[in-house]
Length: 235
Image 1: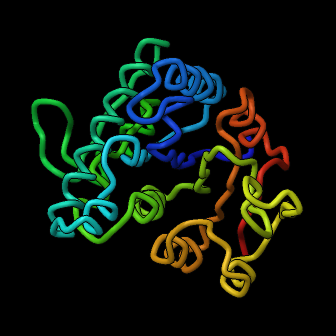
Image 2: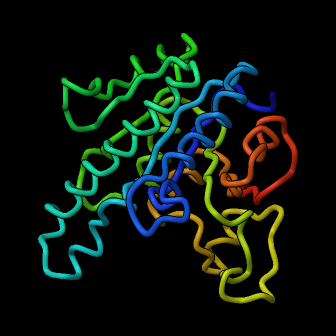
């Protein structure tokens, strides 16, 4: 394995599969099987999931809701997604722990950095729910923050596209994919990788980001093995 410990960031929308909203159990099952295959090779895996398939705080704010209230609702949506993935992971035989930035003792542990690291060392897949626990921060920021806190070797951002392009490949067929790009180039070109807070955290703490297509079976394993798929952001 190229890495010892990674943080996998999944969007809430990725859990929808072909649905318009909610959770596609077949997609979640596929993710669980891919994660297990990599975990079985000895990689320590932490996961952060968004909540956009259930509720988006920014969208609610635009329709008149208080931003902080909307963000807290979005955090609760991430816990629902985290519970769904936790169930799927345990069904394929993995030991897991769900740690939440908002206390919910009946369903998950509170986030404690040392406890999270200990879980990883014991071979458990750790899922971080409820973002950072603070409004005005995205789950991208939560992923970057948790990756730094647990000393992850990289942030792997699983999306529905196979990397970073010069333009949106779903809208512009002439868009060209980058195999590798620096943090400064991303800034200069105004490319949409993660939100600026998350991106800056990774740059300042020298945590590389790999953007790849998580929906294609085997891609997660290829990255864990060091194959050059997706787009690597570093330096």
